[in-house]
Image 1: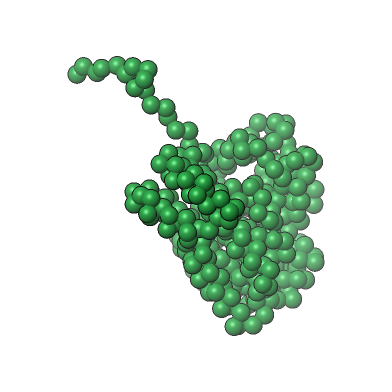
Image 2: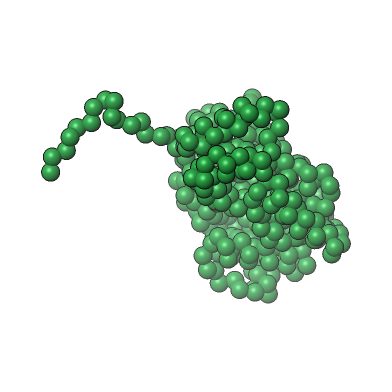
Length: 342
């Protein structure tokens, strides 16, 4: 078979795509401080380790990390600082043991000026190294707010968990976090789809009021090109965040989660899966004051049962089969685990 060599003019440039994760990764965000995401990150990690999965928890609250406290790690000997400054070659070199054999930990950095605003290339480097970590599941506790760091790490996860509570400000912050996450995904798609980039630039040029309304942009895309709209809709459909409502004091406050899901569907054009709620419980506050995982301190409590339900839901969706089928089994394993955490 004769192959005609391409001339220089015929050679098409290869699009450079951003790194993506091929691991199971749950990124946990709150949009604001005080939603309980760090406490939840620790307890979710312990719960999945109890199920039998090999879990790595990463504190990605760059600048103000505190997840180590809830894992009974007083002074992390190594942190992300060591990796980012090339003190060590691999991200795996800063992994720390925890009281549970299946649960490992990477502590956030605190000593680098500007660490909360990592350069894009540095984030891609971290993603490449996360892909090389040996674990069934990686859980990333993200910082508060809507910085590009936080949103970018949320966007590359296989499961993005948003933590909110009945406070109006918490729901508002969670909404704007998701809005910013979608806008970052839109910007990402302009880098890999030239026709979409043209459409996006036209929309921005013709709507120069500085307000980006996602429903109006979707309508514009449909009128601009069905093919471009279809391609982007397929790309965005991969973004399926999940919502956990925390600190519920009344049963009727569960409707706040349903209201939030409907709000996001209407104004952000995405579906959010409301997977469960955690009741307000003084035992969580007491555990937090003592910087101790509540499922270890109170294994038979209703709040631990709430968490088990959430874990079961997440496991069914994202993970493989495990042998812990009932809360009774889960509680028994937690009680056996207590001696390792004291």
